[in-house]
Image (cartoon, rainbow, N blue to C red):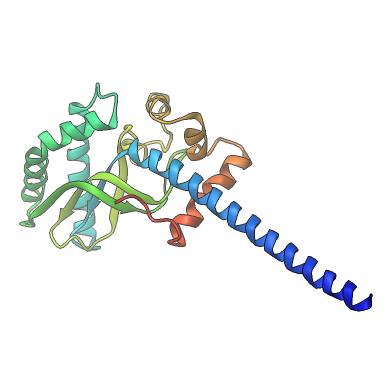
Length: 221
């Protein structure tokens, strides 16, 4: 009888460990699926700008901002009535040569001879905050502007919905931009990226960051 109870005890322990393993696996797969779905939708709803300076010298960094301002002014004029990311990307692609020329003109006017590499594609981005809106790390469609060697500090922003000027002025996301963001995201997805939301949503955002930063989750290419 004593051996029987030992046997049952060992068996019960194995069953418990096996059930705990299944539970852990279920939680991991559920979290992974959640991150995949939410991250993909956020990435699919945003068109970003990425400007790379020639170097980290003060002159090259100042030039980066001048190029940025000129491109933003032009893009904001083109997309003032844009209502979707797809429309913004189409307009950007149609005017890709214009972006190149504007950047080249600014560079030349400031006494430099750097070339400019303009690309519209899908690129990796770190987690970035724009006022009270935070976008998780991931692969986003973007207009990438590389000035000269492109090895200086980067500058990121969101061209659609238009959050770019948030970093330049008050640091407050205008309500119009938030409304466009909400129109292109579900309530769950928008609540995740809004800094004004509850602790529960902030924890979910950290979950997305965990998968992104640990490379357990691979963003879409």
